[in-house]
Length: 271
Length: 93
Image 1 (cartoon, rainbow over the protein chains, first blue to last red):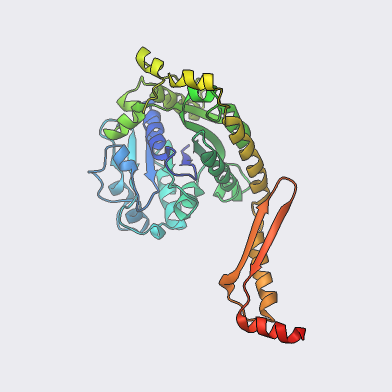
Image 2 (cartoon, one colour; image 1 turned 90 degrees about the horizontal axis):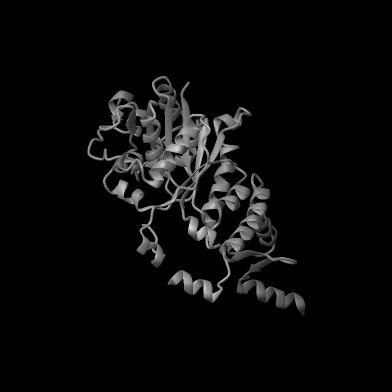
């Protein structure tokens, strides 16, 4: 039974695309058959983060408009044979996405994959609404920062009212994924803590991704962090999150960056 | 060194302030969800009423809201054209 999962946040720059790539890759590495769809029409980036930017021929809009068939537009990852990408269009208008078109694509993908991960654009406009429209589950990517938490709350409200599941009186299963977390700063009271965020959003936690230079390093070379450095703190956190999505019970840990003595003395932060 | 200075300086933690501000704001915003835009509605109706008597520039009608702890204020600022000022003066005499 295929699961449609939207990775969303409201706010931009919190790590939706990075998290879609990392969770998609982690699920594929754990043996699931995964497709990741970029819904950010006009500002696509999932192809770049996955290192497939030079292999895009057709895109989501081409499929929605019937210019290309779905198998022609899907790009198979060169490293993970279970991972596929459906890129967004870079040139088209974002209004070329239609509800009916998206429904057709998702319905077809459901017959071929275990997981369909929809990478939502920022904001609450058409692209973001269509990315969540057919979702069974949602990952709300949140930074420990006031504007991100506020926008997450707004998106949670939309997941509960604007999705097909919500309209049928069912529930989209929601999870909060906290990214760019710095346990030191939280301990010093400089950053919202995990408990603060979960209490405010009243939504279960999927995982805690620490602030880490490994995340930037992975996107620099076009490889999901779970593949580029599988033993790094953020990669381990993404693997744990992927296992929880698959239904496993994994103890929640706050992964810690292994810092050198000098860095620790200087209080230097990774990034 | 920075951490040491901060400890010595005794700077207060800002996270509790963030939590409190968010809790107050979100309690308010959740209440408004699905409700019509009250400010927009007020602005449109006030504009309609005043327009029955005076020719107004819709751009010159400003509705502001300030939510305070004890008192909240709704401020309506309408700029009237010169012609209206003159007719007011005539009516007063």
